[in-house]
Amino acid sequence: MNTATLIAKTLLAGGLIAHALLGQEGSDHRTADRRMATMDHHHAAAVPVTYEEITRTANLLEVARKATAKYQDVRVAEAEGFKAIGPDVPGMGIHYVGARRNGFDIEHPDILLYEKSQTGPGGYALVGVSYLLSAEANADGQPKNPPFPKSLASWHRHANLCVFPDRSVNANLNESECTAQGGRFSALTEWMVHAWIWKDSPAGVFSPTNPNVQ
Image 1 (cartoon, rainbow, N blue to C red):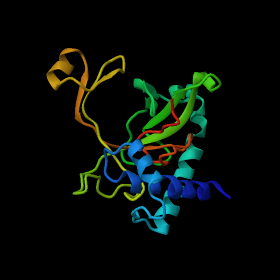
Image 2: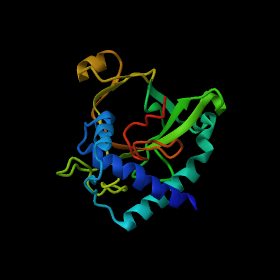
Image 3: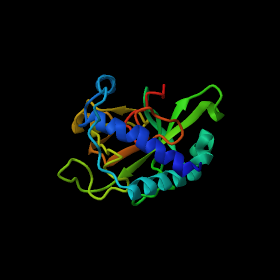
Image 4: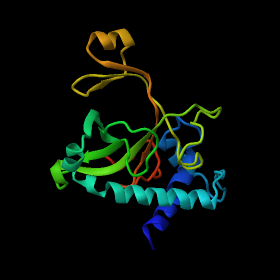
């Protein structure tokens, strides 16, 4: 069984079930667990997805894995200009942000996701990647024409972020407060999606957080 087939199975068994159970954005995983426990012989609502979407997405993620294998050593990422921004967040890890590229490029994720590791090279283990997307919002609250199908991946944005020179982040300041403290203010970020291609997420490969990441 090749990697693309394994990823496709993950998309189906993890991502689709999670999206069907979670329903709309904002539901938590405990709610999904309760729903799954009470399903009995009833089936969860189907999420529209085509065979072509599954296989194309699995192939894209396999390309991403091959392209980012070198970043399993965080020192390689740092040598190529990736820098840690923000705190170490349980379920997401540490975001290493690279130079912004124009447009979506599956082989060059904008962000690398790491967790601390006693055995990993440089003290970190690569757990996933994240892509940014500049696009208009559709009526469904998702970007228009995203590279990953909406039936599998849910994109999100962050509002009112203040990034300081030391690369720490504060989401509780307005623009004037941020600027006064030497920060760079962003009223609304670009679209973002996580892909947990280096450490499986029980909530699905595109889940916003990965419960396995500490």
